[in-house]
Image 1: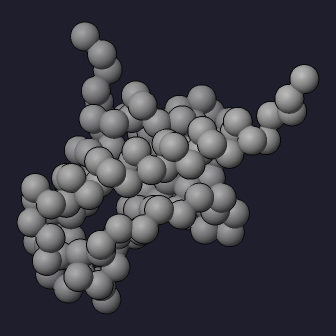
Image 2: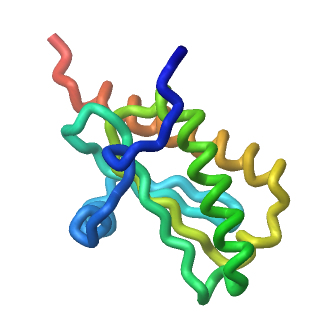
Length: 128
């Protein structure tokens, strides 16, 4: 049985972790109501941080639902993702997405992020 948990080592915990990704984001994946910023890390596993501001998602119940669904999606996809630090940001209109639509959108965003990271790592390795 694979490890499907969400331990502390897979979360961005400090302001410095977040600032590092914001300042040096190598990858951006856009979706309806969501944005993912990511940069490679040397930890050997992906980590995720969430930014769901009150300005963009007014009601606490909506912010909590979105965060719960993003964490669940990450937990299920973490085995496929390369070693990157990811920040998921909510944009205006994110709370209007229903759960199924949000799940499909997140699945597509994780795949695009995985593809972009792999494409960059292949192009940055020197060919013999």
